[in-house]
Image (cartoon, rainbow, N blue to C red):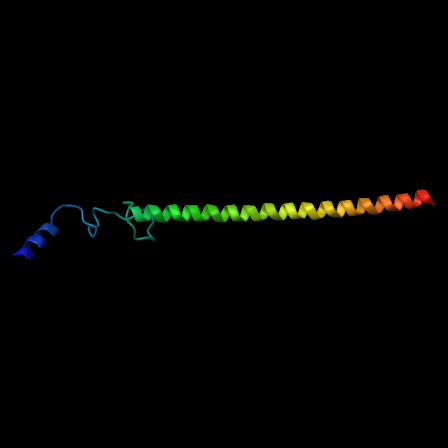
Length: 95
């Protein structure tokens, strides 16, 4: 008796997860996902956004670090050349 009652409740018009009419497919035909957003899906999208932004920030930070190191090396080279030119000029003046 209880089994028949459960079957009747299942066939009611209330939206069921397995009911394709209640949860239509998305516009993208490759994915078999529903339009309804669940908490898990929202959390997954948020995680992917945060992870992606962290990756971009890491790449940008590496780029800035390389630029700073390159400028430092270039400045060191300029200072060495200036020091050599100054010492060569002072030797010429002594002679």
